Length: 373
Image (cartoon, rainbow, N blue to C red):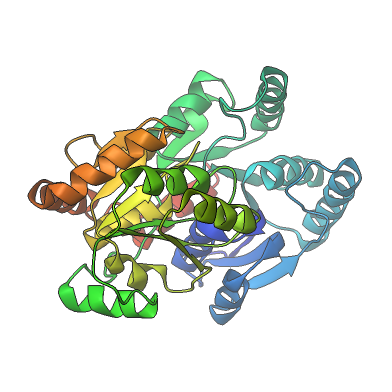
């Protein structure tokens, strides 16, 4: 077997998209693939990649905000890098890296170009002109995308419906999680709560994600305030640019919310939660939701994008509209006040997850995507 040289390009090597990119690279047979991660910024995942023998190159011009000067420099630098390094495959993740990375790979004559849609760069909370511009850009770079891997059915459907990539090149994938992560046993619950500093009794409602606009932590805070239960503690695991604003909002709303910050062992902390809440404005299919289901935690989430792939209303969890804190609070209360119903949904969710979200399944999808017909 000839060893393929793969460039994995991602704007921010962190959070859910970073985890999917890293676990995908880890799942590939090292005898057949050599992966180099190219990113604009990263966190703990940089060290994890290095520990696994994956080379990481930081390209500082590859930044999330639109910056014409940096974007043009990033395009030129990536084009030169792809040509000099003679990559067999360029696999891009996220909107900015997806646009610049695919265009650079096309210009450099890379034989195989793959893109993962973790979600979509446009959504209902944007202005119509911006949304239209993003769709036009995606269609342009979609013309030279050999395979589009879409995280979740709804994302794949939207890619096909909007003609972002030719239908025959679109494939649906899941997110890779540790299927052997700690389950929510009394002992695991006790350990996780101690690590989070939760020493008082009472239910815990938890969320995991970046403190960013997409994840909508403000609605989480308002929902906890609307819940109006002194015995309930809210915990948000993750950090981000909205940390100060969320902290101020929690104080103003008198919401019992603890910001636990960035953690490296999220699966081990999930058993601390009695309910997992996802308040996002838009998503692909979040890793944290699947991890919560594997841990056996009842889930309430917003009905966005591919979340309903796993959160089936009344069967594996509850869904609410985005930006409706009063409805999120009502759904949380339902799960807290009806523990048998909540346990039934959590058990069915774990059964439905099965083996479809393991790293092995993603490794097989990548092997197929990287293969030249």
